[in-house]
Length: 292
Image (tube, rainbow, N blue to C red; front, side, top):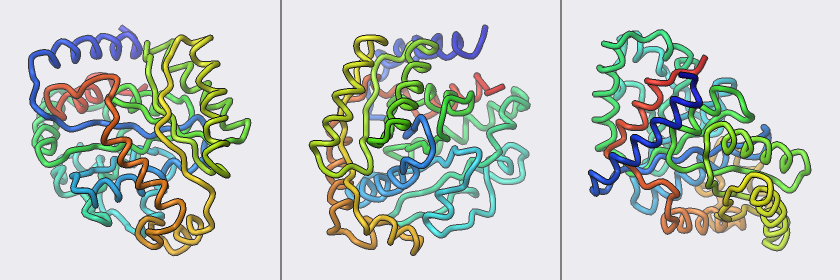
């Protein structure tokens, strides 16, 4: 069975398990994009910070294999990552890095590449640790890489909710559509949420959303939800240069107010796929369908 078929099968199994377990469980949310440079990591970090300040226990999984942008953005230098856990050198709790506002960072780094080489015994031990972690969080936000590589798809399809970041630039819109197309046609995903970044105003954001939404509905038969927009704001690059989050450094800036609205909408937003059993299902998806 190929990776796409395996992930589709796991989605059906998760839906069955969902009916058997109605307890409140963590939400697993991927923040992804069709191209780099659209502000995905900035959004993941600021959103995580605001959600944490609202009383949610938030973990951010830095799953961008190519770049350690969260490290730079937050001014942190993780000593350990998934590799150390897989090799038995550290426990999962040992690699967690405290972030601003009470959120926690899980640095994956290149450790994800080793998933395919884990023994069954190693996978079972990891699942036990991951399930324990699930009892300590309300939301797991995954900062994926950009594009349509197997690693990006791997994390997106293991998540319950997919937030696609796009800007008004034509190349960003085209690449976002390509990403949605792959997830829809290869992995049978039918619902996504859009975050429009770097817009002049709400009118421009709605224009991007309407254009992308209508094309996706007509040609892919998928539903795109409008989650919100982040306006262009000089405070954002200023905060980045200081290795601070704009929501921390300039909480009353236009961008920070957008993040506050975005966080509230996300909390009110009903996921397309209700969370299942426990966080172990997410990790089980990762461990049972490793990227090539």
